[in-house]
Image (cartoon, rainbow, N blue to C red):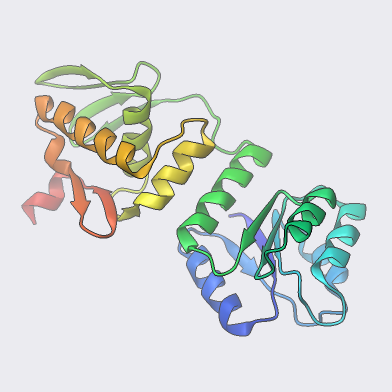
Length: 231
């Protein structure tokens, strides 16, 4: 479980961000004394820091400087300030990203996933075979095989399929998929995502699997398991 230090003095926003990130198994901690941020940071040893600019006593830039004297931990600014100089300053101080308030939680989560994946290399283990709905998915060959035969998917399609299967029986929003594809060096627009998912489902239909990729109108997509249809 990754530990995240959220340096935010808005109690309502802090609770909402903490609850949303907890759904993705992130362990989020806050600050009780905004004059002792470094002490909290040193004791916690977080894997990522999210920090607001406007804070009591010292601003976020001050604490970013202080953290950078101790650690190269990834830092994300989360702020309502939108002046270009604030964004430039955050990057010059060593921040990894700047997210402006108000923000979409799916975007925040996708960016956190991307930064942690890049910094800690946590999901770059060799791809393995995966079994889903009685079919074998080969992520290296981009193929899906069952008793009906074998189909080959495009790189985008296998990425989407894997992304959904890893979160099976959970609705994954379009924004999360788009941002994850973009960070993986595959730019996908909203319309392109629709085309890719429709093509993926049509190709899976050749093996009788298309119906297990469900569209949740106004929400996103969900990969189900065969047992889901026999309840």
